[in-house]
Length: 331
Image 1 (cartoon, rainbow, N blue to C red):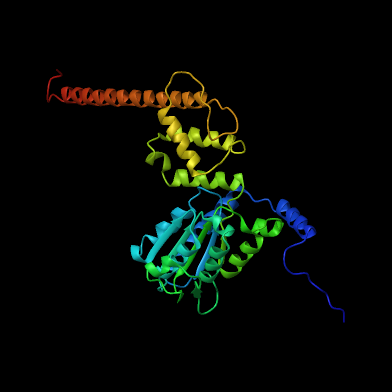
Image 2 (image 1 turned 90 degrees about the vertical axis):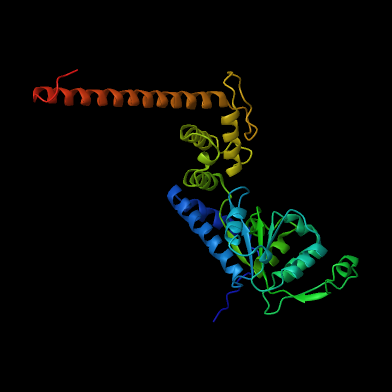
């Protein structure tokens, strides 16, 4: 009997090439991509709910920026009291992260660390993060260095953490782990092994466009931004045509174009769209949308006039019928 030795750890270049071939063969349709995205965001909400019930101890969520990751998490956490949730966006020092864990150490409490990838450059903060997300039955977090800040705030040198931790990032951890060339790969692997890892699969322009279009229409984004449906349709048409030319593509891009649509003075000058890689003639886009909207308003005006004429016609027909019946003379 021969033994077959399987290599473990990071995938080889041959394995990565094979994965690339499979992904090319399994190109998904727009319907399949959007269905998958809806399922993943629904799963994000359910996992966040599980964190509030201490069923999910730690979770890592990755996806493109500005697509609703943080909004979905905060929307779910808004159902629990404020004292049981705390969110930090941006940088945080190691000692402040230790203090944050102490404040939110009770069961049912949730810490959200959002867009704080700089933590991977701080060895102490990273060790605290690993301890907070650890999978062992008892998550004991320690700070055995001398700290005047901890003494001042009466924080002990160790505590057991019973809360939940959610780490939200724009980085595709799996991509970096597969490539193996990034110096932070070992930290990504350590965090992924300790937590539930949910990749929203929003890393390419096809998926981003489908999700942005879905949220903008189903979420009535144009209505909230004070933009007409006609202009909103034109904006989405523009984004679909130029999705590969944009510097960044997210829900924020839609909001920027809504602002441009509302602020655009009809002076015939060309706009340089700051969210695109090249100069785009937005004047033509919005003037065309304006013409369509004016045409629609004219149709509505004509329809209103037609209704008045029909009403008058019915009134005269009624009077004529009454006259013929000898009830009332026609005036």
